Image: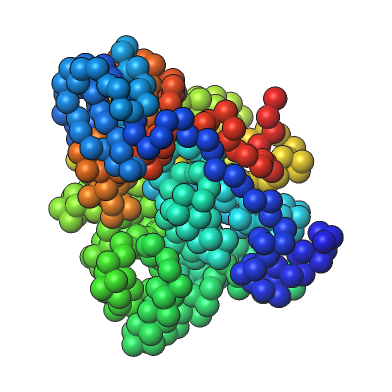
Length: 495
């Protein structure tokens, strides 16, 4: 089948059948051992925040942890992993990724070329993340049909990959080529872009902002029937200026109520303090990047977030580490240049200068530090994404938003923002499980829980960067052959 015919089929069927024709079949990674695994002599950092436990034996059978014991003795009935001198942690969880190539005006070529390869790309993303020990990811904005298919194949054990949870559209936004997402007018769209907007929005785009609460209640249940794992809605538009509030308090109450009736968590993207306040008052469970606002957060809003115990998905990967260092160098250079210019004479000119210096990164940094200091429950939420296909990139993409390593950078960044290494590990494991509503199964190393585990060769409490030193990953109780992943790369360019 040609690429042109494949694309035509994709839009005719809205991606429901295309993978059977266009996508290669991924094979399951080989699993050494036959169902039982024992990790012996290991130092256990269990994700609860408790002190490390040394010389532990952790047994796994049928995908779950069956026992955790001190000095477990000789093991003869399982595949043995020697954990001496090593450190065992729960698998890491990223509460905000984007496994689709969902396009926007700056990435038309990529979205067109890869429009019919959504399942392959989602699986590649999940497999790349898994190699870093990221065993669960929440996709908070992406093309729903292919993501759900890959999610289900991973859950059934047909393919190996990081567990996926999907929200589909950010409710109230019209897709990547829309006014609410990218300030793109309908009159500027091609037919392809209009179809792409519809595919991503899934009938829950800008039109639902005009609905009465009862109409919205019906639409919410129709959307929940599609099989989404959680709900994310636009408390404001996508951008910082103007940060337009999208839904009334009554509408937001309906969104939260209907999702909670189905046991689904609700989160928001809101870029103003008033937009965030409305969402917190509506009863949301998580705020995606609460630090990403148009100005510094008011003290009373931070206090409200803490009081309501709303999870904060922080993009620490974008405001720490090498990314931060590059920003500070660029800002210093631009400040020196602007200091030689005449004073700005209009508000637009002042904003342009602030945007040129990426002033909002400094706002984000201050907000994140204050949220952490105030005691907000934090989970890493990286916004990791594909972006342009490698063949269309003018400059290399940094690793801060790449699958898997972006999550590691975010956990490391939490320490730079004020957490201890132990607190950062809890944020990246236990709190991530809470965001996914899977606390009973994931996030900590405890008897009875799903065996999603990471084995490190060095102590992450001595240096949080040791979470990069992965020796082994166990997902759903099976040892992952990381050398084989991703099995069918499209975007990864291996050396």
